[in-house]
Length: 599
Image 1 (cartoon, one colour):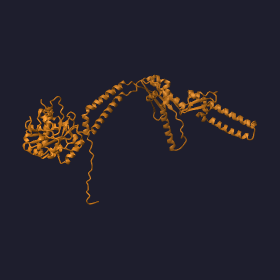
Image 2 (tube, rainbow, N blue to C red; image 1 turned 180 degrees about the vertical axis):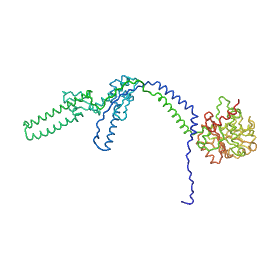
Image 3 (cartoon, rainbow, N blue to C red; image 1 turned 90 degrees about the vertical axis):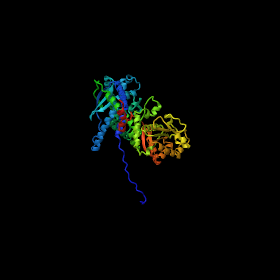
Image 4 (cartoon, rainbow, N blue to C red; image 1 turned 90 degrees about the horizontal axis):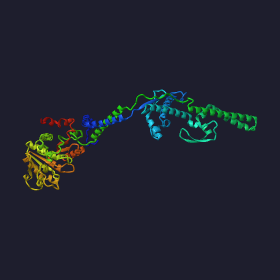
């Protein structure tokens, strides 16, 4: 490593802990907002819950006989695990079938629910019925409950039983492969070549003859007797072919073999007819051979099962509180303005704080009286806040350096001039010989507030050789003199940084205890930086809920770069009512009102 390379010390960045107290105060400030949303949600959910009709749930119980385990007889842990998994999958599948569209459509058709609900769409009614139907298994048994809810207890029991019957019919049809309507089309004397269009369980439409349909039935194809006879038939047909190679057709051996073949064919046909008749009987319910049966039919419930009105009221109300609290926290998180004194440090503005000034909410008051609350309302909370601010300024630096004070802000309309006028009045009323200088040569306002003519002023002094006495005017406030801006100058930054301005500051220090200079905002304008560099320090006015934090931080960096000291910040337009909770504001904002209030 090169010798000249500097070693940088390692600085561990410690994450700032969450200020839970801030969020507690934030929720406390917004208590009535949270309460309002909660009461609105509570009222609406209560009305909704009370208007909902009672629901009655009836339950029908089924027993399912599981088909034979395909891994039965195989030895080993894997085979046993497969068997258990297969059993669970089978029962889950049957539970879904009980609530399937195929089953529920049968219920809709059987009970004519399209007329009952005055909805001609069967799929829509079946979907609504699915939402009212629940199927659950009782423990690990083979018993299953079909629970259906309705507005009427009798109708709920009727629906539950209908769903159970429809599932059993569906179970029949799955076993039979085709529906009983197709089986009924197979009369004993039907024509073998008669063709019909059928739809198999997979939804495929086929053109089949009677013979083809019979041969496609699983019960026919898996019948052991028929399979044995067909094997004998095939073997005998092969023998006859060999015989015909040696004998003629009418040879006794061939004739006997042909007779045996015909007997086997008739036996096969007879067995098929028997199987079909058994299937028809099963489909009609005369044979109780099925994998599902009803153990207990549903009975009309005596009391309603729902709705759970307490839950319908409580859940939305709790959710409304959670939502509004999250919204408040998110709004505070993304809010980059300063609301109260604690926000200065919490949001990373490490500047000396002089004091807050409350937001004036006087309605219908004279404009001048409001602008000079320190003079016209000496016992008001605003006047007391300026007296507190005056004391804080006196202790912010050495007395000599505080002879000249420059007031500015980051942005326009932050109340910088209001602060300047009232602090000047407060200093004058305290016995200080005070001079207020309107350094805003772009948008002057001092002469309007103190009702002075503005034909001559600071701009005249800086651009000519007139004496200081020619531009100084006495106000109606004792000990307070004023230099108005004079005519608006086309180059205010240049004349404010001139030697005449330095001479003015020097002369004023000889005749006045305090010189207060009202300068334009710092953002976009150089006037405040120019005057601040002449004096050496400035006081920054920040408007609560208006000035972005990044704007203050950028201004602070620029001021530090120019070597100007910020001796303090003033938080203006603080809403006392909203910021009365917690911290500094809790003990400051209403102290004067409580302690000095006239009795």
